[in-house]
Image (cartoon, rainbow, N blue to C red; front, side):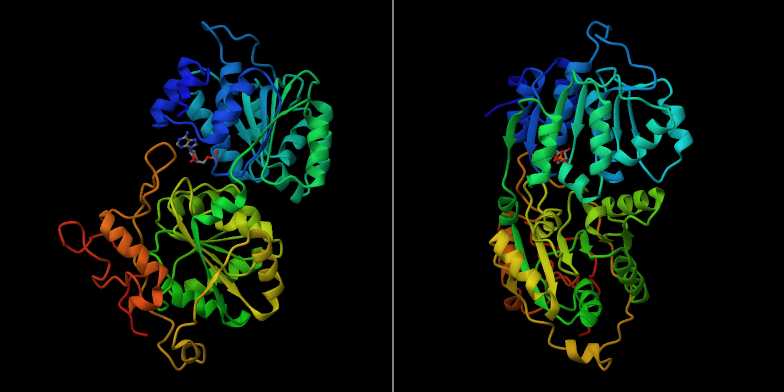
Length: 474
Ligand code: AMP
């Protein structure tokens, strides 16, 4: 199997990888690193979760890094040597962090600029220039228009999630940027999908690119158990609350639950109603300020608030290990978006569970999703007492706060990954899996926090509690 040491990377970069604990390159890294090191343009067809950030960052750092204390070129004044464009603030933040991690020993300066933060601060931090700049296109053009920054120093240009940048209406920004970067440069272009508009953009940006394509999206979906609940639109909130409180035996233990709505307003409404029902949750979408988004993500990452309600755009590119469940509160009207959504679970070798709520008027979306993904969504029944709860004659909706999950380390590539979310023995894991597969046969909600979470190898009950673990009343 290819190792990082086989790819021609320098010692400082290999050391940084060792510090991160990565030894084996992911397929896109193995394929992309050698041609990028050789200076070729690259077209990478890959989505988040494949390790694409390191695939472009590691060889680029090697091309830029000073050798014997001397850089081939100086850090340019009010410009940068490597520019990475990303569609969302979250993704930009994650890429900048990776650049800092991987470039820690290479002596390169990394900055990031995104919308929703102080422009003045950005002007100041870019005044002396930087080696690597990660930016969202809108903020970058603002600074260029203000003559606070220029692209004349760019040697390496990366477009990450180009399809998403187009979806977000950045096409004009991208065209303008393509005219401002030097012609003599290397371009690394990434997109999860390749519609015609993207092919045109590739033609404008890249020169004879090496094409690397990894994991067709459907294979990610293969590791995800996908379930369907048919429910009326105005009853979805009740169903969601019942699920989060484990009043409905959906499969799997809750660790972190990511819920998708189609609109920002819809996300806020779900969060508000969950709060009224005593289930703490955060929302993440474009109307939230940058500190609010960061706090929501941080609380989700640490599983302090393990329920996050997101819109598609905000969630795109979020890479948080240990998302056990993705709930599609509303189905996306674009089937590819469904694949992106459920791909937030089953990260880096783990498996995951996706649940789709489908109302009568969403059947057409469901049909498209089935057609595009080829996925068979297993239909789950509504809870037995659902009607009674909806009509307000069942157990009250206001119940004690659900228990919070503890943060958990999820195995990553190259670390012998594959074992999902449980510290139980192999036997216990298969029992859990069988239980997940056949929730109705489990007899009661899985892991209802009453000691039914199973035992460890020594036969003692596991101590770890997941949230939603209150004793069942319904
Ligand atoms: P990306 O697709 O770039 O968003 O990366 C997905 C996740 O995989 C990130 O959390 C990376 O830190 C992690 N990762 C990337 N490359 C490797 C590797 N070779 N071994 C282990 N983990 C990796």
